[in-house]
Figure 1 (cartoon, rainbow, N blue to C red):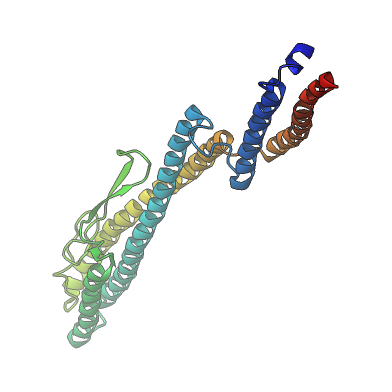
Figure 2 (tube, helix red, strand yellow):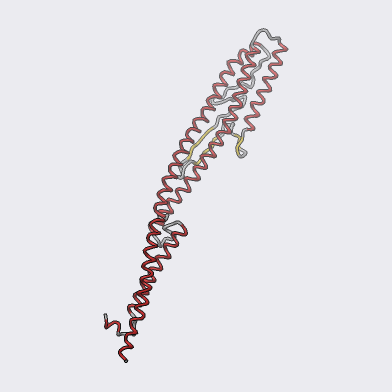
Length: 278
């Protein structure tokens, strides 16, 4: 050791202390970066495999998040369609009520014609509801087929076909009430049975919407759970543990101070060679 100190051409000990100080400062800088960003991995250099894995997980989280938004939009579309169907159902109930009224023998021909006029107006409104029920310009009650993307994968889709619902083809069974007349007692009597069939047919359309909405609600729940679990996994890999990083910072700060002191001592030690010339 003494022999090294008397060779002043290269201050080996100071150089060694400087190298260690540089390493310590680099580690402190890395921890400061983690504490400022909240991430353990700020570049691929920090952890190459962890970086690749965390980015794959981030991509999955973002895909699942968009799929969750898509599910919400799909439910909105179906709710609009169901609202149209429900409005039509209300009209059908009123139309059956009028048919039952006109089928009674106590009414005159003129009175039945007045009832039929009201019935015809309701039937026209029935068709108007069908044409006015739209989403983004797409009519929802004209045998519309829609495919919703409800997952992160390319095949995670849900195809929904909404039944046609106009007077000529009501509901799933395409019941035709367009020619129904309440102007005669016989026509009104026949109309009661036909409207009963139309109500059952439209009920199937509403049930179809409800079944698909139930499926979407299930997908919404599973997507939310998948996002939560995937994000937790990504966080464990990529995000910084502040308690651990702060503990490491304290250790490195102490090591930094001792290395600086060692560097100063190593620089002053070769000066003892001057005593050899006294």
